[in-house]
Image (spheres, rainbow, N blue to C red):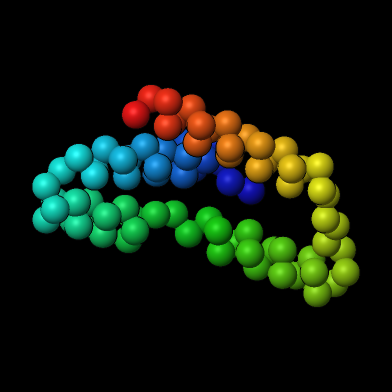
Length: 84
């Protein structure tokens, strides 16, 4: 399970990326490299878990949860575009 602090780090990546894009090109590249190479590997554990669940037949798709996440992401992106 991903800790709350890890979720905050993950959720801040787009904000940090946007801040780094305001830099000159060489600094942008360095910021992007740092962001990529220092990103948490928590997704690998989640992917392995889901693969195992699928292989054992225990994975259940929950369309309501998928729809909720899509709507939440849409709202966040909409809010970010209004701030720009």
